[in-house]
Amino acid sequence: TFDAQWRPVVHQLSYKNPLWWPLAGDATDLRYTLRPFLEGLDPGPRAAPPLPRPARWGPGPGRSVVAAVGGVLGASVMIGSIVLVGLLMGVPLRERPLLEQPLVPHSGLAVPYRIGFPESFRTSPPPTPSIEHAARSADGRFMVVVAADSVAIDIGGLAASRVAALRQESGVVESSVERGFTSHGLDWQEARLVARYRQGLVHELTRAANTGLGVVAIRFAWRPDRAGSFAAGDSLAERIFASFALQSGGR
Image (tube, rainbow, N blue to C red; front, side, top):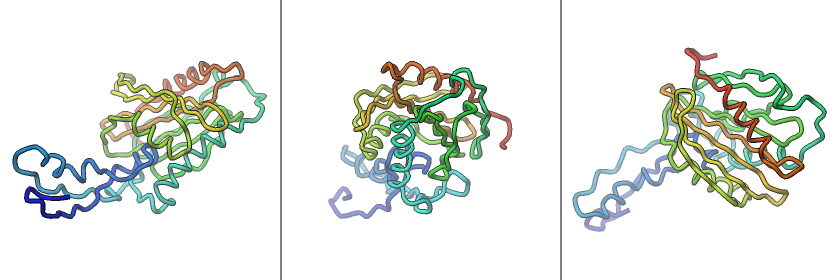
C-alpha cells in the first residue's frame, strides 16, 4: 500500500484463524492487513501497520498450519468432496429411519462439547486439524462436519464466506440467508444456502458460536428426499443440533 505521501509501504500478510479457512475457502485476512490504508482514505493521520497474524496463531489442536494437510484450497476441496461424494452418490438404506435412531455422542477437543450423530452414521477422517468430526448417513444423503478452535473469532459474514467457498467447490448458490439467534445459552450465527451442483441440489446449514471457551462451527448438508423435499434433512439437522452441549471439561 501507500502512506499519506504516497510512498510505498510493505505490509506482512495476515491470516484468518485456521478454523475459518475451510469454511471461507480462503486463508488470508486482507481486511486486517490493509486496515491502515483503508482507514487512511479518510482525512486524518493513518494508523501504524498492525502486527501480522501468522498462519500459526499459537499452540493448540485447532491452529495448525494448513500446509501440513495439503493447503487451504485442498482443505476446502476435501470438504467439498465430502458433499459431492457423500451426498450426490447415495446408496439404498435399509436401516431404521434416522429420526428414530439413538444418537451416539461425540466429544470436542479444542472446546469441551458433546454432540450426537445417529448410530448408523459413517465417520470420515477429518480433512484438517480444525475439523474434529465429519460424518454422513449410510445412504449418502446427509452429512455433518464439526469444527472448533480454542480462540474466539469474528463469525460475522458467515453466509458470504460460505458462498465464496462453494464457488471453489463448483457449486452455484441459488439462495442464501443469514441470521443470528440464541440457543444453548450461546449467540449463534447461521447461514442457510441452497446450492446447485451438476448432479443436483444440496441444502446447507452452517451455525457458528463463540462459547467463551473458544469457537464451534457446525455444518450440515443434505440432498432432498425422493419427493423433492428438504424437510426431513432439516428435521435431522435440528435434532443433531439440539444434542449439542458444552461441558465443564474436555474429553
